[in-house]
Image 1: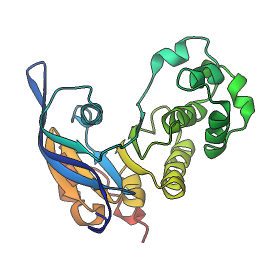
Image 2 (image 1 turned 90 degrees about the vertical axis):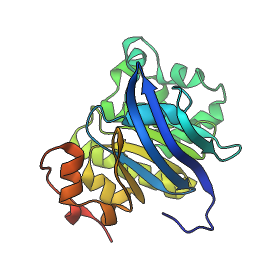
Image 3 (image 1 turned 45 degrees about the vertical axis):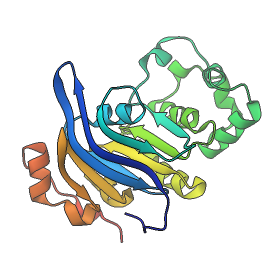
Image 4 (image 1 turned 180 degrees about the vertical axis):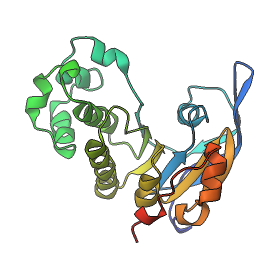
Length: 234
């Protein structure tokens, strides 16, 4: 991870989460420093989304979750189905969170939209546009850290790459710290400073190029998985 002089934004020690008498996460400890990108990698049902929601305070847990004092958190969920099921314009969606029109316009610039998107209904825009609207919503209030659950949902390959590059640009321009749930190994190599391979308990964790191997990936997913080390950018 980053050098010790960089401020720790999140510290997790001996985390355990039990839901409906089932142990979802156990024996998880890690630290995240300001400006890092942490990726959570693992199969379906591994506890990745539960981890994010536990960090946000939605689920009870044992162990320690310690956020930096006064930290501001933005959260982009995997899906918000009700938003696309009702005739709500993008402008009305933003106004559920803030009435500050100038702030909304500024955030739209950051995500590459003009103000014309505000008049469009949420249920009429593309999946890629919807993903950016959710990011913009999370960026309102200038968060220090962005928790992002599965950016690739509902987006084609070209759009998927755009979203990840966009997140990396946001990190650099705004000094954001990012926690990213993903299945995409190539993304882990390109953008992550630290990876946690999670299948209810940590299978491996550390710098991607140091801890990811065909063996650990096979152990994580319980089968052979195509290995993407050649995607790593130096």
